[in-house]
Length: 407
Image (cartoon, rainbow, N blue to C red; front, side, top):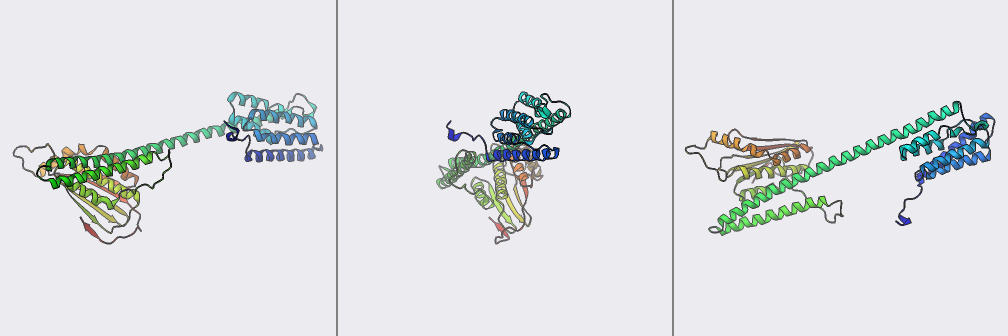
């Protein structure tokens, strides 16, 4: 690695800390020496300033800096009579060692910081008495504070990683829901369109051509939406040059209702209330609920009718998809002599209830819950199935003309 890419030996903050510690120690020793009647000498003052300035390298060489501060403290003690002390430079150097070094080094540094600050005081080579006890208390406080800060930092890092993992898991679930919606709706539509084209190819070429056009459009839409999801997955790897395509919303419901009608299910869309813009996430949720409900109806209800009702209210929007379930599902026959009625409808609804409880309904519930809404999905007593979502929307959005529209 070249020198130009190496980290600097010290930073501006390191320099400020070093200068501040040197000034604080020099001022403190000068004041206490004046009170004791023993002015601080030039050699001792120089040693104090030098001890503080060594802190500029404390992050690069913490143990060496601590050793230098302790050695210069002995010089201060032997240069003239000074009162017992545990200077700010020593506090910072010991704290840095306790924050960044191995436990064995921290233990050795703490033990060294007890006797050495008192060596040479009063002309004694070996310190003793209350000065050593005060040094021991100070060293325990400094090392304990550093270890507590390390523990807090580890907990904070663990919490940060946990939140990042939760956010990643939530994003994966969101992408899974999007993929399910894309595959379940578009692939099902393509399958039905292909079957209809094959069935009508011989006797109704125009109907077959129309089915193939719908099949092509549904395939193109599925590819487009899957590309958007892949762009999201690759967003951290390469810069995004083109803005993402707008997400579908209530204005796109007519399109999927038309697709459902062309796929063979009699489908009607009703919009009640004053139409107004919705937040993008709420609009996407409305679209996905209708898309999933119509897909399930085509898969499980057979040749039945479906009604989609979107209602705008001042503080919420509701969407309901209901199918009557009276038609026969593919491959299903009637028992001999049974007339279609309420009892038959109830059996049909009950038999379809378990089939509607897959990942699609789970995804719909999660989507609606994320918007603070509620979802109801259950078979009807008279036959058929109903999916209804209620989503809160803050009032004050724009207003469009028309109180009720039927398509």
